Length: 207
Image (cartoon, rainbow, N blue to C red):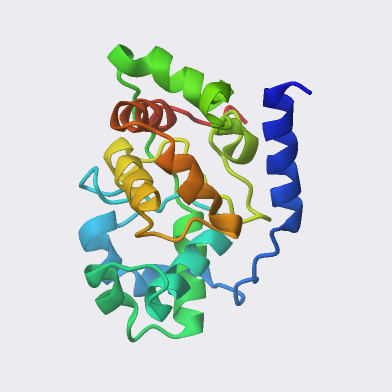
């Protein structure tokens, strides 16, 4: 069987098995009122002022909620975020997620020097080292898959994506069901990480 087809089928099986826990009902208006502290790093509309920080605007609501919960539980480690979420209730986190999910992400631009390498990895992966295409879970436009809690990476800050790939590769950040992202990131070189991150930062949905 064609290796690319095997990777695609594997991704679909993983997708089908992922059963995320739904967030509490979020109130976007309440979330806006609670987002003042977030704005210092992520901007008032969820577009970060520093490329090493994530854009929250336009990210899937439940994914944002789950990540806030992971920071609070300690599953995901970050000293700054741990302090920020320490006093947030479940409803606070749901409200913040609803607010930022409804904002518009400011799309980046891919670096032309690494465009071809990044595009090849994103669209086709590398069968020689068992690397699946990013499109299998994150889609052609990088929109991800909300029901499976696969995040939107299209338009995300490239330096932030690189940092997360490095964290996945080292095992510092949990990589989802079956440690899938840990395995994928560990197969990428630093050059490949930067190239695919750059390519993803310039993706957007035409819908």
